[in-house]
Image (cartoon, rainbow, N blue to C red; front, side):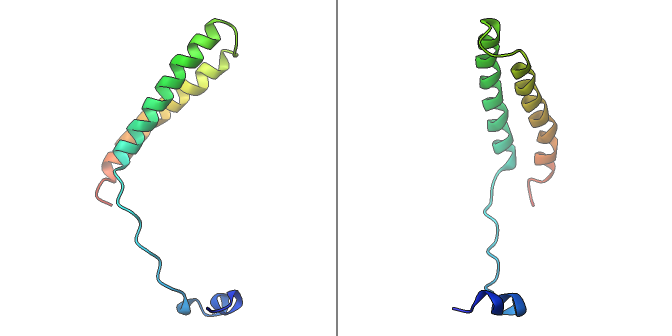
Length: 80
């Protein structure tokens, strides 16, 4: 096994980088939006009872909005 210094000085001796795993980004984004939606419902109930501040609802809403904004990007990069 070559030392770290050898690999830093001679990067051509490193093993090749493995290919990234094939992942459906649309599914990942949709699962993320679903999780944020569940969190929004839970935090909404907790905010209505006064357990958590109302600002937590805005954080969940921002997560949903960012996920929905990322959905077209994920669809466009499906084949990459």
